[in-house]
Image: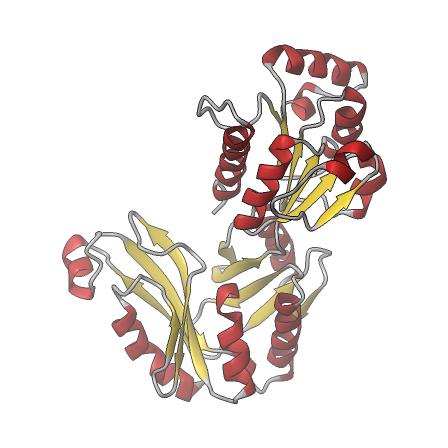
Length: 344
């Protein structure tokens, strides 16, 4: 739904009621992933997709009455191969969809509060989890922030804990409480790529990071590198400081990916001592197996456990027999995306 924010803002500003249909579960070779959304207005304007065209017609037909009623309903497609062909799911996959009148048009104060905060979070790149009750009839929503604050309908406290778990897992999913199902949809902030060390590989890694939507941050206390490196694509931030002076200012959670590239143990270890104690989603470190063995020995001497040290991906990157800085950067970005997508 996040990618449809411009349309959502336009339609709500124009007071144009619409329904949102969201993929809440998939099986097999479904065409669109969980969280994909389709917007349908009263006059059948559309934005987004839940199946790449396979079941959109059926979803629109089911969604239009929900706008008038102000309700939600669960839709299932592709139970068998024969049924899959019947609705256009030629791949034979199965998808479960929840369609509802968009909460911005719900006059209840609790729903309005959820929409106003959700809109603000999405516009300001602030993370949250939207919990939607998956029952026919009037919709109920709860918005949960990473600090465990929440607003919306009065729902069991257990669901706040579940929302935090889902946020940390980086995977939108169905959760259940006392036999009632809810869809927990994660709206993360923009992922961060923290690069320790400004070097040839850094130049290409910044370009790739920006290409794939990461906020890119370069940290290197050596002025000759931070000031003289020619970046084809400028990083979002660059610091001529030691990592320990910068990293505490960043959110080091599952949506943060860090790569250590300086070749200088004083700088690399300065970063690793903080990163290994954090909840970052990925830590990569440049170097041969021999270099990694020396790094492990230093970290063990500093009191880090085997479990903590095992978080480091080293030698860094997926194996593509990379030789040049561009190729090494590509292998690192490939590994980061592999880790990122493992949770989707």
